[in-house]
Length: 331
Ligand code: UDP
Ligand code: MG
Image 1 (spheres, protein in one colour):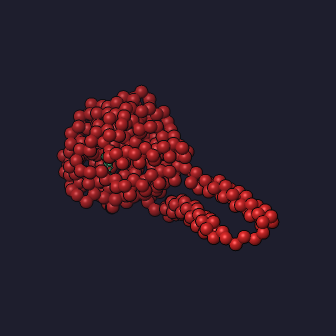
Image 2 (cartoon, helix red, strand yellow):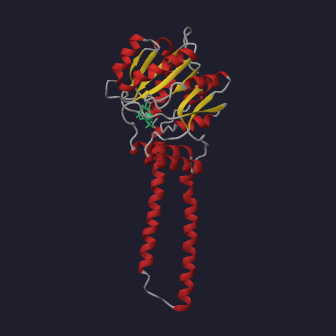
Image 3 (cartoon, protein in one colour):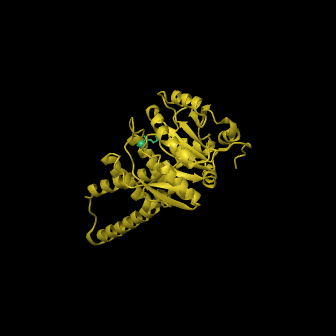
């Protein structure tokens, strides 16, 4: 799909989304580069600066001036981790790409295992967390709830414990590149594309420096995106609720009719009236809200805005001129 120039092509591209991670970049590379040198025949590390406002970009500039294998794309503002990953994959030139976080929660040593599996013929090699101890208790509980919901209502099955930390073969990268949706729930997309997949277990480490870049607000948005992009149940459930309520009101009508026939007119009933009116308006507002969530997402998609805007490129031009055009024009 990408029309690349002849010449040097790295075997592996490592994509790292970064938002204010200046303290973590050097320690990450210190551990990652030796692994890559050993495991791959030529590699590049692409940092996607997702609108950082610390000195992340300066650090990246300096690292690139010393080592050409380290490149960066800088967004014009914060577009979110999911979109940063998409941009990194758009610019990846390797025959396979690895996606990982910058905060050393994803141990670089696991990358060697990914590559081994890839050489065996797997195209979608994902790391599988053994536990989630690095997160707070509340976040762990909410995450668990979410994945349970996704399991029940989602129309795609997610492998347990799998996240963004993974290796994607060129074929999988091209498949993902064809999905230009804005509300990106990458975990779902990775599962949706299929291909020969396998999990590699790993232990999540503590974040090296700084704090998580995901607030509970961001996580809620993300969870909603995930559920709504991979399930239409929230839309369809109203049909069943509608049926149930209609049935109930029909029975009530019948009951009141018979009661009036046998016992005459009876004025009291104010409480039940108010209760049913408020209950039904609540249900109606709720269903309208669900419709609104979907329509908002449809609106965002039909506007066909580019997924992201690049403010600056640091290195990597020699083999990705065409892929950059591709990402900015084809939306
Ligand atoms: N990140 C990003 N954009 C964002 C939020 C996060 O590029 O809007 C990056 C962040 O710099 C890190 C990775 O995504 O490299 C994972 O973020 P974080 O460690 O904060 O998430 P957590 O581990 O808490 O899920
Ligand atoms: Mg983290």
